[in-house]
Amino acid sequence: MPIWIGERLVLLFPHEDPSSAYGRPYLIIDPGGKFGTGTHPTTRICLSILEGILREEQSVLDIGTGTGILAIYAATRAAKEVVAIDQDFEACKVCRQNIMKNGLDQKVCLINGRVEALSDRRLFDIVVANLEANTLTVVLPALGARARPDGLIVISGVPAVAQSEFLSLLEKASLKVVSSVILDQWAGFLLGT
Ligand SMILES: C[S@@+](CC[C@H](N)C(=O)[O-])C[C@H]1O[C@@H](n2cnc3c(N)ncnc32)[C@H](O)[C@@H]1O
Image: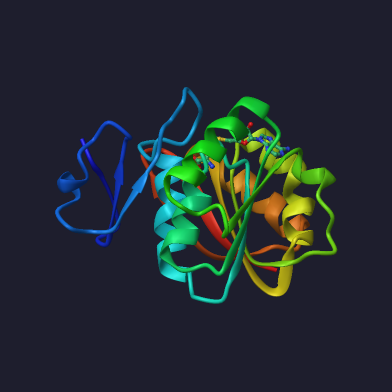
């Protein structure tokens, strides 16, 4: 069953017929047993926030890329350059295949590693991270450090019940909440530095 991402883009699994996208642009994502099919609310929160902020000429860092869905979406929709990183070697293998299937190997650079080890000499217009809340808490400083001074950060993975607790962590990390989204008991945020 094709999954609509906003009004413009359709997500297909590899076995699905491209005609089921009804002529709309589509992404092909093979889950390969990894997180990032596009159905989870936290992924959808990130996709919906990205849809509103992505512009041409931007650079995007996707932290915890899984299948690569957010990186591939950013590269297909607008971004000039995307770096995707995941600590899970198997997820990177799946992601690499998905990057190739979508013809984005010139635009998406994939790194197998932890975000904390990524150099902060390279800054991005948009940093997106859909991670478990515990991990987000630990990597918050690394997220802020990798966004340009006027950059935006998109995060999701926080249970809605833990939202207020998480808001105080964001304040401590000097990250400003631009907007928030709640979907099916999950929270996501658009942040400014
Ligand atoms: C919830 S999945 C998100 C997948 C995809 N981005 C999505 O939105 O559907 C989180 C991913 O983050 C990766 N991850 C967790 N901690 C990480 C870290 N410190 N650095 C890099 N990747 C990490 C995991 O291996 C996992 O693939």
